[in-house]
Image (cartoon, rainbow, N blue to C red):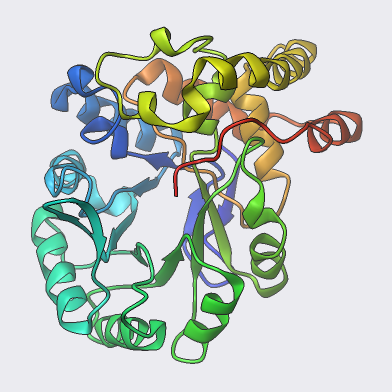
Length: 316
């Protein structure tokens, strides 16, 4: 596994990380298997996929418990990332960036994860009712207290990054980014590259679409959250197939998988870019890890850069 540091001042991590959300939240709810997921996390560590990403809202709470169980006895092998500030309400998901909530959330995450510190803690979303400086200041106090090692921002604008930096260092930014979703590549990614900030693309495989595993809505598992999303309609599938076909053609030239091509394209965007694809199976974990070793040619990159905008807006 090729490695980099988590930003200019961070710990050593593999060029591909592991997102654990789908092990217990959102995707394929009938396919969750905690014992199998623990084995996947263990295999990830064996492969050098040591950046393990979770969040308190996944479940809620059950995903952190799962990750904590998996890391028992192997905590020192992982760079552990979790998030707070996105909460489950009676009507869906809400935001809570109040300092008192975040401080309590960190203590609860530490307990669920079975650790005395979190390597990278993200403000999951900026609460529009709370100045980002206030949320960030509360988290900075927890860095000083030794509970958190570094701080990150998730799904933020460039202006929000700069505002937070006035209070405390931003070690990492997590944004949806893929061959399908490129908004953050316009200004957020260049800023992170120029300033030595880690950039963690989530949903780097287009929520599974870029793997080529799905060709129609009926291919999704029963009750899968993605079935309600704009990119998973019949019309969008038909339109976006042409994009997936190009990715597959590039993969065929390298004897690789489409997922590996999608990950290698992102990794090539910067020294500290670490995609965090999620999976529940060792097979796909191993394939994703292989994306860190795939060298695309300049012609490959140009072809992928020129892909058209897909149909269907991503989930916010």
